[in-house]
Image 1 (spheres, rainbow, N blue to C red):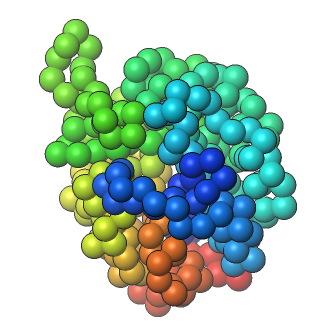
Image 2 (image 1 turned 30 degrees about the horizontal axis):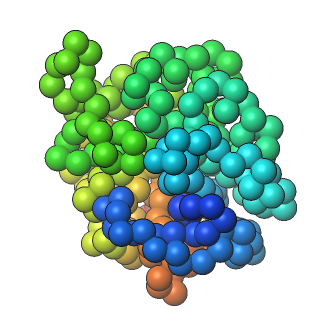
Length: 254
């Protein structure tokens, strides 16, 4: 059995680390580089680094910053935000990313997932699925994804099954209404999506304590990501790993 991963999530605008709730009310909470260095010392399983300003600002990834952040970081780094082309994916991998998150561009042109799979394989392609009222949203939660020919909105399970078929290697699953609230993950959403696909699903959005992580893993998540908990409480990834291990979950512990 593969060990379950505990993944801090960092959201940035410019060089600042930001945090909000439900994809809004963003405020600066630190410096991206300093936070990455802190997690490097902690020896985390993995790190997710998302540029939430890229898509709204109509720009691509900040390749230079990614290179700077990953230069001396010793765990795998998953990077997303503003990724629109195969070239963007290639440049992020060359800059030091181990995996690349794609979201809005994949919703507007699903064949983008297949193109990335053909060029790089599935192992480094993560598709972010942002959900509200079981509908999939793009552009940082501002536009509902519609089915072809002006059909009804795409549901979470339908899109998850679609991205797996197109070649995604992993799903980053977020309930927008839970994001940043620290009240726990959307367990029903996690269960429905993980039961519908065979690729790993990273639970994201709402984690406030290690018990929430245990619940998400028990619902089928292969990894659990958290931002606010690691930013605003004293809980560390190692403490989460120890809690999960005490409750029968296989994790990585140094």
